[in-house]
Length: 356
Image (cartoon, rainbow, N blue to C red):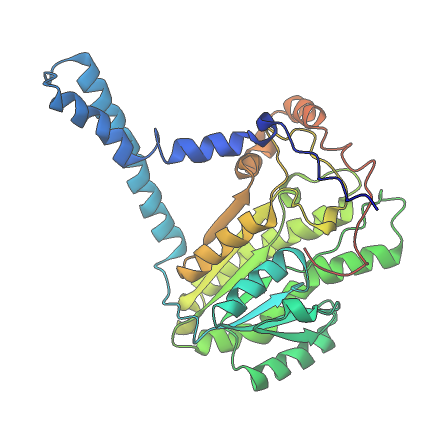
């Protein structure tokens, strides 16, 4: 029998994306340290202070530095100071953690010694269950969530970190969606977040170190897309719920509410079975995001005890501006991005289970 042929390698330029260029720029020309290297180097060469090259380099370095300082101040004022995080004392609940993004996060935290509880209707393979406590639960069913929550509290203690990640995609036009499809979509993609947070928020506010709530939404919750009306509506609901929750925590009479940090994640298309074989129209501008990239960013922020927002890839960071553009410009942008035609050849590659 002939050995299997190796996978075809991609050309070098296939790995070049606008996100990669932006990442490199953020650590070079847009980084304060690097920006100040130029005027310091000019002075080392004896360049007079009044030379245009020196003045411009100092002005640019000063501008970059002020921008970074203002970003830090803005983040501190918007999301508060970091809360103390010690993984040995944290209990982490992850929905949809039997595969994809959720499983990646669960595995890493399990190996790092945290108490991890995964809620999913699909079982975790034994080889992937190291350090993970699995609870069979349909997170779209309030009764099942309550039962699982009670068991988690008995087994592991009071959860302090919630990562609401479970999700499903139907990929049908509005007329093709059955009532069962719509109900399943909203139960898993939206209602599950309410059920999970209601079970654990009080305990988190009672904790001396507070807690962290991660809401995994989608950029589609901001702009919508054809054949994703139910999915986009649920994800838009998550963004509104998350914003409202922040307001409630900020004005809550419970002093422990001030110690809760919230993280909103709005990624573009992830390279997981959730969106099947759908390909990105433009790999340079809108690359498919690898789950490990999102997992690393979420864990970095959780570990730091910070609150905030995470958007991937780069275009997702600017989608809030899409809805303030003139209608004709919006229509042209949607046509150029093939946003409303990308799902035409959608073919799901999952076993009908929730998960990212």
